[in-house]
Length: 163
Image 1 (cartoon, helix red, strand yellow):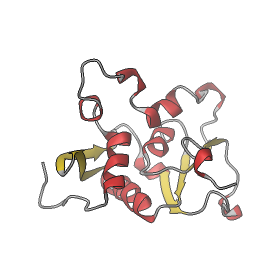
Image 2: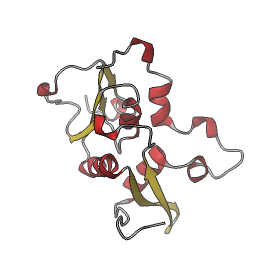
Image 3: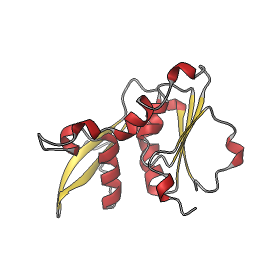
Image 4: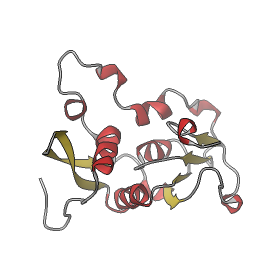
């Protein structure tokens, strides 16, 4: 699965889990026939099921605060002219930036114990990745120079903040 031009992203266990959660196929995320497949693709569903695209202008700006490795940020770019993804984790932002630059990222995730599986995180080719930028930052202290936004997504974030 790897190519010489793109080595695996060597990371800790959490990075692989987040890449799997954001970009993994249904079979990679839930290998059981009886599993809750309707609950998969949370980052994509946060945008497709919660965003009223009829209310957006062509010039809409979006902020994905707590973007992790960026799947929701990319999904917002389907509907918004400019999207800014911010996360506290430097490693998450590194992954998101690599996905923004190349469109894919090889990684490994833990299946069980020390057993790992190779996978590829891939941004849908229909998404304009040039509409997206990623910044490392603190959700409790957002840079006021970012300007205003028409859409703000804070999925899986509020419960992680200390205040």
